[in-house]
Length: 179
Image 1 (cartoon, rainbow, N blue to C red):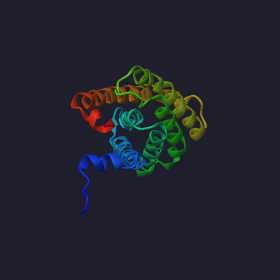
Image 2 (cartoon, helix red, strand yellow):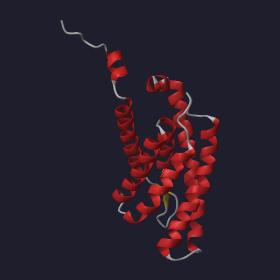
Image 3 (cartoon, rainbow, N blue to C red):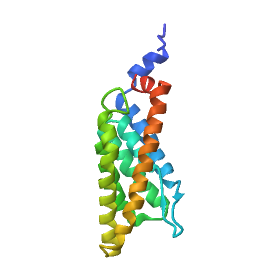
Image 4 (cartoon, helix red, strand yellow):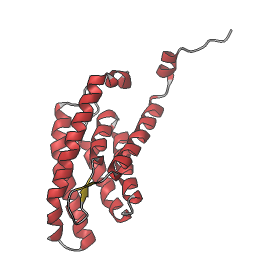
């Protein structure tokens, strides 16, 4: 007589690293896709995106290593697909650093550390991209003009992250996700 496993038993027997890898891959794809959705903010072609909100979300749901990988690879893929491969060397470590600010420990996405992390994302993003622009363009003054745009992007991503996190917490998703 063959014993059949119930769906709950299958979930309990699934290797946690496989589950984490699948979720990390999905969040990596979300970082890429949401980053590629551009919001035009200036007539000269400058734009912002909300891809960082997915970086924050990945870091709030996944163990640190998986979150860093999803953030760095997702951001780098977005640069590659957007036709801006020169930015990959800057984006990957910046997004990885952003992921390190957040925590997935605990039963709530919106916690003290993650709220503070949204504010700490500003100097990392602005400073990282300022340094990258200085090196790429060979000018230390002109990249200063991009700092307000980077601040707007961090703020918009933080608001989007908080909205998504609140929806996930209210929907009961976290109880099912964390088991």
